[in-house]
Length: 535
Image 1: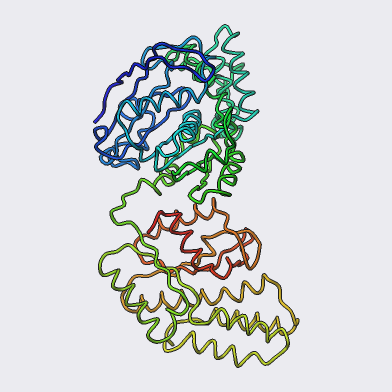
Image 2: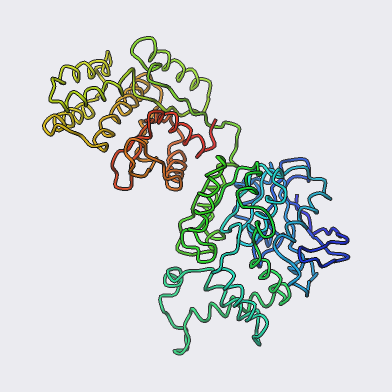
């Protein structure tokens, strides 16, 4: 279902600056399912965008539509026009009366008048994301999920400075829209993007470069479809994003927000920089657990959120994918994997769930008391004690009756590490992590091999390739951005098998083994479940 723009007349609206507006036009469009019959996704458009999210002239057709990531067969898509953006042929000359928060208030009033009780998600790109931040700060219980993309909760000094220059151009240039757009394109893209696209090539005229023609084209194109007052209005809103202005602290505001917050930055963004996005994420992470940060990798800068659709689809897929056969993460501890009844019961559970068609992945701890045993052997080896009988006992337990499973690589590494520790009479936390990691590796390899031997398709998954951490050996902290990207990509590529995943371990940027602390296997399972939105 696709509707043409519909208008709501809002009466007696007072702006944050105290200006009373007797009547204001708020237009909107609805796509997909009939309003209030399906989960509602509100999409806030960017500076020169509008409510035409999908359709013949839709600006997000690659993301939203029939069987797309945001499926119009399942969701209702609601999009308001920023009053004065001109799409509905209404304009506002007194643009300085408005801030981003005023538009957020107007959108919230529109939602109320449409009798929408809650939103499944709010998605906003660029200035649309800034307006979305203002909305969740004003109505913290409004939405279940919030996606600010290439945006932030405040305009930085750098952003304000560029908006100031834009306003100067818009007010003083003889060709204001064209010239302002040319300047803006230098903020929306990067030097690397320009280099790849143009390679310093000239046009037919030797005194003109292709980059100049391209900039003139974009300026002329916008001039034909955008009014000067609309550009001034949107630029003013971009400059005034700040959810804390005249209010309480950022922490107090966002602490009240129930929604899962999925911040999506762009590594090359010159407008809303990735560093600012990361700072926002780390600040929220101090007091709110359900906040996540992901980053689009692109050389194209701010505009990448309108260009890198495959990456954006993957990031949104965490929330919008088909939940029908949602993956479950099963985690088995050391005692449950002990020889005999324990391991046999674990195998029966896995096989039973697979036979029922359940979509599962398995995180395993080291089997039995492996971690304690390895730590004891380290201590004895350090004191030049006779540790070798304990090593042989450890190997015999881990191999047990499964003599056809090749565990020689892990056993050989343990022999080498213990011998080195015995010779030196000491070990580092780095060496200790290498030693303790072998317990999980042996466990995952064994379970994988047994399942494959029983005709169950399983894949050994070394979490060191997925979970990247800092170098705090013994209690390493995950680097969430790259870890999430690794996990999402891995499960997308390996979704036709049961992945048997090592718990407890990760690796740093140098590839060295790290451990996540003594409850690390639970932590691994939780991280993976969060990253892929599993049960």
